[in-house]
Image: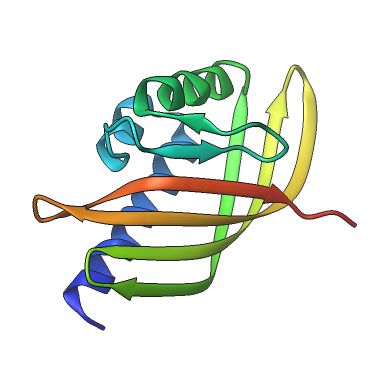
Length: 129
């Protein structure tokens, strides 16, 4: 496995670790801070730019008492300075006293900037059925 591929997968892992731990500081180290970053939470509209994206994560973290995420990589691809990782997310969430189990498919797109890989696009879609 190339070092770039290893680095992309490590950044993807860091994203899910920050998500599960509800750690906005760790999340901010994974995401590109640019205005071109995009995030689509399952069933939600497009959020553009790190400032708005970070606010959305803070709201999720604030309204979630407990979170477990089991990410399973379905596919990954790397081309020059762009890479994507497609993930099956198995999520256990406790919010407002309710236990919610769900599965989503997510595509995480990373860009190589200044020698490091950053998340520039996260799109989560719920699995129905």
